[in-house]
Length: 510
Image 1: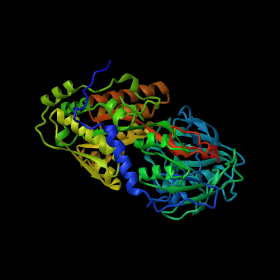
Image 2 (image 1 turned 90 degrees about the vertical axis):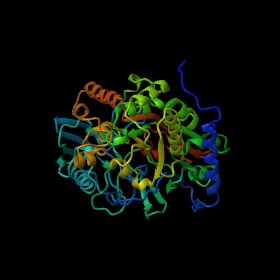
Image 3 (image 1 turned 180 degrees about the vertical axis):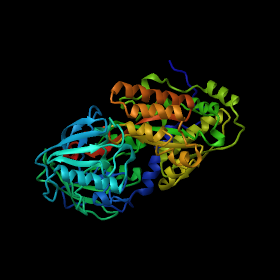
Image 4 (image 1 turned 30 degrees about the vertical axis):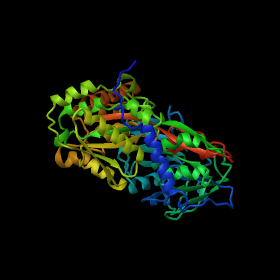
């Protein structure tokens, strides 16, 4: 049986604390949500964790291309994250290492009755990349051309075996290039799009596949406790990404069904290798050994999630989860800290503001690190500024939750650990350092995996990256996330997808 250090006897149960926090938050927002269900329609109301019209999404007609079913991609990630499947493209093949050809599905039309052809698809994808460059795809605006009426040719800037999976990313959804409103090929048509307001839909009667059966209304409810409360009170029909602490309460609520699904997403603490206070590998590894991921999942997340051994979720095909053991060992943690250069300075630990679960996890890490003599100061940062501070190297520790939202997860390892990946590039280019990038040898491993067409060669390179990351102590994996989806009892579906952004709303009915 695995040994672990338990909390002090006088320490409050974290599960109790989480439940109390959830309850107080619900009480605080009760009766003042400011949103009411439309009682004059049978449309199904869906509460999302962010405003569907927030941000700069002009290239998609002003609506975020996550969750919303207006545009579609050439390929699709299956619910269990196996091989990439056809969607608007029926088949594809390589011409050479940097050239792909995709055969488009015939008989598909946009919401304005324009036919989907290779030339329209090329124009759409070029416009998307022009408006919002997506570095991990290896595309430029000039990458797309029509080989014939229904054959789309794509040139990548380097060999990119993950191209079919990259095209399943929601940001690669095809929007009609001449439309100002959301005009795609999806099963729903956007009827109302106004910034900060719910988005109403109608059913696309000309949809190329099985049609939807009910109309939808998408509303943004940023506070997770409010989403939970609205579902419990019947003010919404579907709630996405509900707080773990309210799962049991909702499960016992008459008229509500809750389900969970494991995402390709990991909650973890990133330790800045290049800050003076955390530059010592012995200290970083000491912090790693001090954290009990099993206890955190059991007590703070109500058992909803899986203890993480690796930076990448076990549902990702090349995760090193099975090769890396649990990392908790308080005796070893103390030995490493004593052998390090740490001299008692306070470490700055940033978390996103308003995230109660992150706050509780951070406090538990703070408590356990205090037992081995390491002082940690937790600071909440506004969500809009959080990743800026993290990527600019302004913290010693940062709590992040990162994962794949498409059929290929290659971009994750590049973004997180390559010196020129998005999380490290700014500091690497300006200071020659980075944030959590282990260095040149890991960069070479990532490049090898990124360009390998052989699946096992790719997997071995990426698993080795994870072993090096853990040895360097730049990441403390905590949990593989399970998201919680709740529905009212008169709702059937939707079928769950490992990536909640890819939920198929046509499987939902009332």
